[in-house]
Length: 147
Image 1 (cartoon, rainbow, N blue to C red):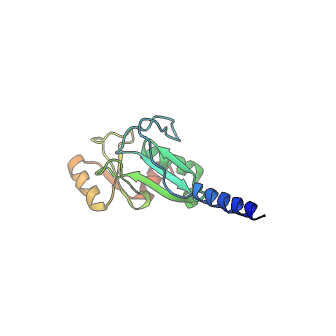
Image 2: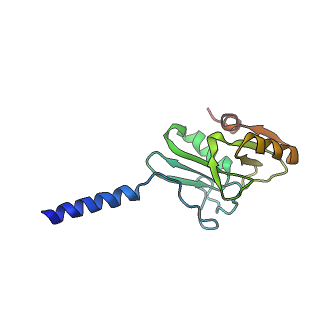
Image 3: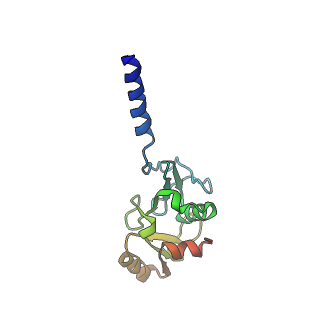
């Protein structure tokens, strides 16, 4: 009986740790975009969301993730919504607090010319350098067709 209890507790611990709700590592050159199925290679435009149940979805471009969220209308069911910080390629930041720049001078994988910045000040500095228009999360979602 004691042996069965130990197995039960060990199994419970393994199950709980296997279902952690956190972003997953992006394997550049191997992972594929959940939306368009392109291989993820660009560290300056990658994005990811994690559901409240811990399932991670990775995207090669910010616009792919926004289209996916808009189509599924599932923003409230997401624990993490992350985008690449253009100024620190590979670093993911909270998408809902990022500042977005759409500039023809910065090409993104799917052609929206969309980049994200960690602060409005960084976005303004990039806008001064590259031109284009600045947006917050809500404005960017609407621009890309949210309901």
